[in-house]
Image (tube, rainbow, N blue to C red):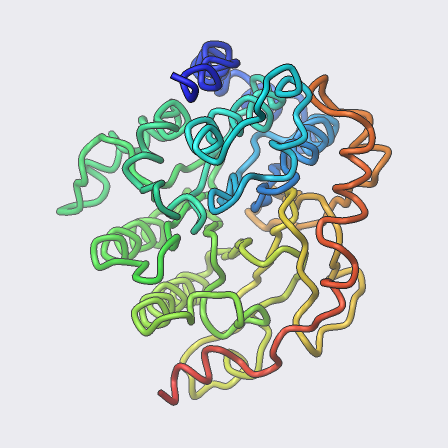
Length: 398
């Protein structure tokens, strides 16, 4: 009964907001496009909102609205799950109860808490949700994720795309039920959300589906650009030590996806690859010796890591110096501006403490915001640099 008490806190309002927001979503996106006479339009993306996401995500929501973004895309890792998130433990509404929430209480309510504090602030702005590795930490599972976030995974855009795919992707009909990987085409851009939340991803079915989607894009003259989002980076990136190279199956399936995107790029499609998982901002992540080498059959794809939505922040990889294209110990999001010809310009929007304080909800005191800015993590932990050797190079030798 104790867990039921916590579960009741805000759940009705959260579910109602998810369903009502999805009903207004397409109207919002159409209004954004219509109000921009230049024909350009924008969208926002970031990932990893555990630990302090309840503080950071409302500020992201406020800023992307100022930017007139058509939608927001979350690349996964919503809550820590293996422990109680720091922002959750600091919620003022729990102070009235004794004892405070246990880990069992937290596990029953963590995802509802995410929806209440991190999705609701976006209001009628379309919110697309990816899955990260923390969504598969026991006792959480992919099936639970599909059930909990069914309203977001059944958005009108996604349902319509699944219906279109029954004829578009010959022989690849996966049914109309929501999945953790999906895509939708908006104003000539195909946005593809992949699931590499576990070491065995991508599995055979997802690779076959992905290949079919990209083949359809190549054949479709109305699709000018492909934007692929996922949690972990593809192999042989600057973020290799925290990528799909953690297992042989991950590395091999990631290489297949990369090769397919290189093929699309060679067929004159604009291709962009977005990921999070590493808790910093880093651009040009596939501009590495491996992908610059013609013998590897690839090419350098435009890629970004943007794991900056509230998670405990990581130091940049060894050998990467901070600058405009590489930022550690920051919160923010990536804004993509789509040109008429399908080219997309990306810019990182960093959020400061004043912006986080301005959107602080009634559940939090100012000192909680200050903690998230100064001690997530403690600066001493940030000074430790990651291994310089590529995890992919190590895996390839084994």
